[in-house]
Length: 129
Image (cartoon, rainbow, N blue to C red; front, side, top):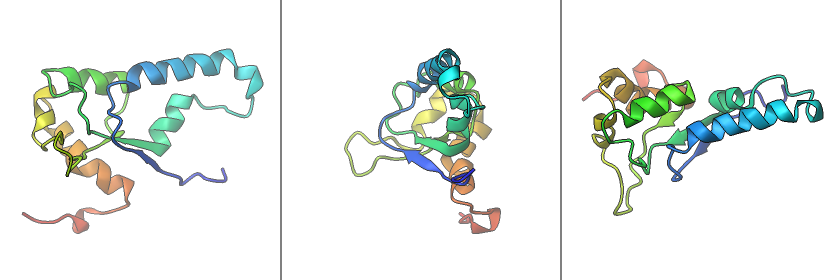
């Protein structure tokens, strides 16, 4: 692939809309498959591989269980990268998403680990605090 290492970060559009978007994108791909025979991978898989979405705005995913549902429906815990949206007055604090899940490892992954993977950083690059 010519651009196999390409990464895209989509910022400030939320992420709760992703599940129906990915589903629809895949459905349309199946319908129009004869028109794009070179595209052997589902569009949602390409998005999971190359695109990341920031968590601001949280779109209600700070509500109990809401973040878990989105993660389950997008079939990946690697698509979200925490963003404060600072200096906007409607920014999300790092603790805001905690209410959307009971999985604290997921919160750590969104807050820190996904960004490290996206930017090719290692554990040694992590600040200690």
